Length: 292
Image (cartoon, helix red, strand yellow):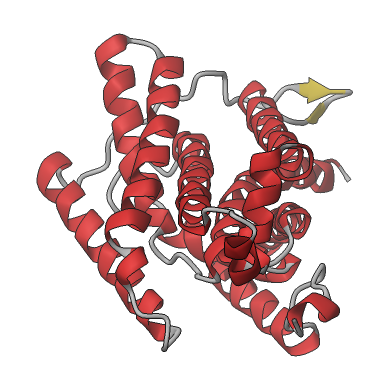
């Protein structure tokens, strides 16, 4: 029982990071109907910026702010100078461009920072606290869960309580009608990419100190797992991305703890196939919205 609780706490913490990454994928999907396969590489690039600033200033929090700001700028830049000019006649066009962007970012990072692992210290202790003799969450796990919760609440308020959020939703679901009503759809699209990249940057800064280290390929497997979480929850559903991230984090924690870490990639593949076969739109998909 103690081991089960320990794995549950660990799965919740890891799943929160997957949820943040999945949320970034959902934001871009809702805004542009594009699965951003470059999300992981973009997050690594912003994490390099964050830790470079943290190293220069001696403050993790200044570095975290720099990483999020870099994410905002990088997301807007990618949309403005690259994705906006990709033809939409074939859905594979965006996928191919995104994969090319991954190779470009990883090559540039390798040339600038090198391909070796760099240490990425955490701002809080990563040793688990004990409750009743049971190892539970560490202070860093609590920080991760709290940060992701704040992001989810802020995004929910943005999309439901603010005029800019309502314009973004309208531009995503009915761009032609939105243009007729005076909404600047292009600007809303840029904002969507910027927000998604900022959330991805935050997720990158949260996951790098958990043992991954900092190197150009640090987010490759994290992106695959986060994509699985987004599919499990439903690419159209921000709430589904959060639930999917936590669910995937728990499942992988149990699989790793009871069957060994070598089975983790297989567990991700089995989960992804199971969801696609049983409920292709994800657990939180809306059948009516998908037919519009």
